[in-house]
Image 1: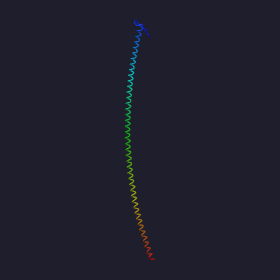
Image 2: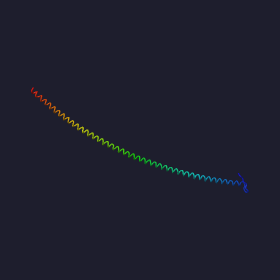
Image 3: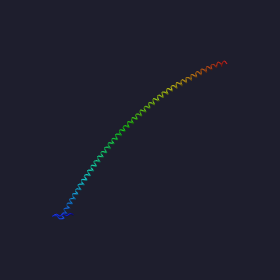
Length: 160
């Protein structure tokens, strides 16, 4: 402890006045500490609010981008589905046309074959009739010939 000698001060008075100064210093330091603590809390709250705002903004941006990507993907999927349906309908129509064309071709071929078979049948029937007529004519000639031969033999048999 310092003791200063004043004309009217005593060492106890100086000590009291030093204690008051220390108390004031402590009070000022406490007030400064409280102010600094309050400022730090305010700054921390501000930082938290800024970080929360940034996080909210980033979340909103990410959600917007996700919504956009989802909408884009849905639109692309819908377009691909529509194209696939169109292609499927085209292929189905092509297959149906091909089937119809094949049936028509088979019917034309069947008609041609049946016409050829009918013409062949008619030709064969005509040939059969011609051969039957030839057979009948041959039999008639044979009968006539044999009858003539018999007639020629009979007079010889009667004369003999």
